[in-house]
Every structure is written in structure tokens, then in C-alpha cells.
Image: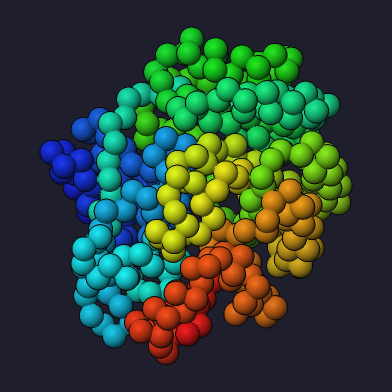
Length: 373
């Protein structure tokens, strides 16, 4: 698919046509030529296909919804070899399914994304020593009370190189080119004390999705799990932090592992009925992402067991809904597990099974979270 990476922009209709092998960085760069952007991921070398079909969270989600909410159409090759155009009035059942189904129904040759006017932004990192954990959580909760849709915080429990000491790092985003506006929006975070690391700057939108390049480079062994929480529980954050410190002390090869709590404003997501697309959890929630990175095969089970324990900690603060792009399919217990699949698709699961019977009865597409007819 990688050579199918052409991207073109219809400026009059504000639509982005992107072939299925493109990266979101290529979409960002082409759209930016016209002062436009769409909702993509937060890593520029992510392929558009997998992220888009699962849901798609990004810095613009609070304002414009999920990536699936910005898919206006697509061209897909289904298991029978047919090429089908999808939209709100063409092959509507498949168009409903691809917006949240994962990779269960075919190979997408081209996506059509809604574009939005986009200006330069201010974003970056602000890190505090670990002893500021409680202050950082309380500042985040205070910020949530008056936050807007043009700003976002990701709260990160990590180890800060080069000493790899435990830290609390904020990824801060303001959808405004003014650094003064940025400081005002995040004044509560700055009141946590003297940061041990700060790197904030004004930048063009495509550069925003390159901020995490150092932690998302290629190599090593990687895995991701998630949880969706209804509120920020300081006890859970403390428990996860203590577990993280102990785990990375005992397994130094996993020092780049980290826990992200993405404090998105989900009102836009929740404003769309849960049966309007295959993506089901249409509610107010915050997204916890457990990013695992380690070196050797011998540590696979150790890392996996620890990450599941962190997921369990945060599941107590939500309804156990799962995000298909991060769902656990690494064990026999997880593969074709009805409970897990219902936690992904909720009431939409039965309809997806019917469509699987219609379009892929022999389960030709069987990677990731697989729907069996």
C-alpha cells in the first residue's frame, strides 16, 4: 500500500482525498499548503488506514471529533475483490461499518476527509519532578472545569532522559498562534512549580504531529493498551505511578514505557448517536493509553502482565469500554472473545456481525480485533 500515497485537496469543497497507503504527515503537509487540516493521529508517520478505520484521536478531536467523524467517503476493496465506493448515500451499510470497525471489511484504496481551516498553533512539553504528582493532578482537574475545545492536555507518567528519573510531563496544545494565550490557558499548570524541562513554541500545524518523534521512533518491541475513564481519580493515578516506578526499576530495558492520560473534551464525540457509526463509546470520557516499549522477547510476558494490571487500575474509573486500535488480541483468551468485542463495539456488535456475514463470510480479513460472523 505504501506506494499508494497520493494526497490532493479540493479547496472549494474543503475535502482531502488521500490514498490508503499515505501517512498522516503527508496528509498534514498537503492540507497545510491551503491553510487546512483534518483530524489525524498525534504521530506523523502513522498510516492513515488503520487509525482512521478504528476511530482516530488527535489534537483536533475536541473541536472536530474523531477521524471517523471526518470521513466523508471512501473506496474499498472487499473480500470478494469488488471495488466499492462508500458514502452517506452509496453502500451506506459499509460506510457505517468502516467508521469504527477496524480492518474487518476490506482494504481502503482512498479516503475522503473533511478539511477545516487551520492556523499556526502553540504546543510543547512541560515536565515536573515526580514529587509534584498530586499538585499536577489537582491542577489538571482545575483546568478541566473551564477548558475550551481549542486546547488540550495530555498528562504523562514517564521517565525523563538522560537520567531516566520518574517525572510528570504535560503535553500542552493551544489552537491559537499566541504564546500569551497559551500561557493564560495553562496558567494553572505553570503554578505547579519550577519545571525540570520546558519546550514550548509556536509552529505550523504539521510540526505538532512530530512532537513525539523521539519516543515513537522505529525499533524495539512495542505494544499499546487503553482504558476509558469517566473522571480523573487521584488514587488511581497514584497507584499507577507507584506501579510504573517499581516496574521500570525492576525492568530498566522498559524505561521508555509510559502512561498517558489524554484529557480530551469528548462533547463533540458524545454529540453523535452511538449507532450513527460503528464506533460505539459516544460519551464523555478521558483516554488512558499504556505505551509499552522494551528490548527483548524474554520480557514479553512481564511487560504484558504489568500493562494489564495498569489497565485494571483505570478500568475501575470507567465502564471498561475499549478502543479497537488498542484492543488486546495477543493471547488465545483475547482472540474471538465476545466480552472484549462487546466492550469495543457495544450494541453495534451484532450489526457488525451481520455485515461480516454479508461481505466477508469466510473471515478473509482477520487481523487485530476480528469480527466472526
